[in-house]
Length: 96
View 1: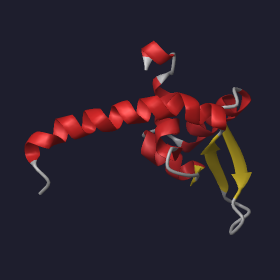
View 2 (view 1 turned 45 degrees about the vertical axis):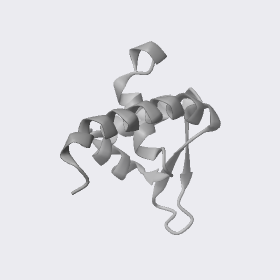
View 3 (view 1 turned 90 degrees about the vertical axis):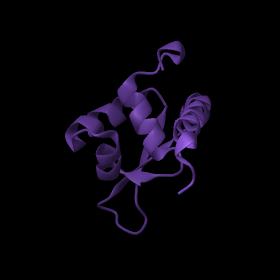
C-alpha cells in the first residue's frame, strides 16, 4: 500500500466496494471501523474522486458507496496482488 501511496483505511474501503456498491454500514463492518469514522473517510475519498455516494433506488434512506473510475484504477492492481497473496497463503490447506 505504501508503494502506491494508499492509506490502510482507504484500502479497506476500496477493497470492500471493489465488487460493487455497498451501504456505508456494510463498508464500516467490512473495514472493521465505526460507521461515523467511515462516513467521514468516505467524504474525504469522495473529495479525492475515489468513491461516489448515491441513494439506493430501493431505499432512499440508504446510501450506497461505489468506486469511481479513478478509484478502480488505483484499487485494481492492489486487489490482484491481495488475491494472489491470499491464494498463495491458502494453497497448502487445499480446497476443503
